[in-house]
Length: 176
Picture (cartoon, rainbow, N blue to C red):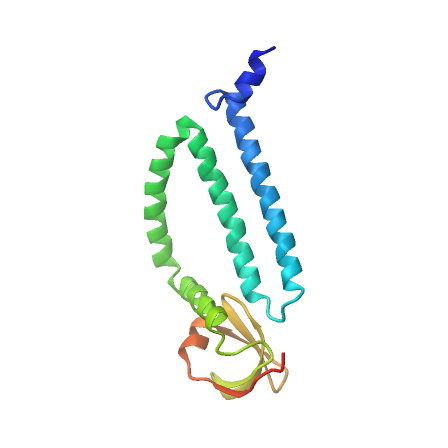
């Protein structure tokens, strides 16, 4: 009977692996839930929640990554596997980066739009489109695209790489 609690705290046993894995997962999940709750509270006081949502999603991802790294550090058998995984992830990230250049470009452009704020939600802007020069109101700035509404009440979805790389005229600033 006394061997079971010792096995539970020993990461070299199956019971210890499961216990530590569950403990790290539960701790990470609680941290993620706290991040989500805090983000909702902060977002309630903001007019543009794009940056808050991005920071929240990034923080949630980092919590799970840190929990996994700590778990791998506690379990001696995973230390060598962790090194091999890190090497494999490096190669895979290069392949994914090349394959997803447009998507990653939109993400980086979205980060620039969120950080530098050349325009805000509610601003009226004028820019070139396949239909010609249009005037539209900025409705949403996400990390991948910007949503505009033109004078005909049509949604104009513009990739952020276009928004960051085109000359745009701000007709008026929102009062938010």
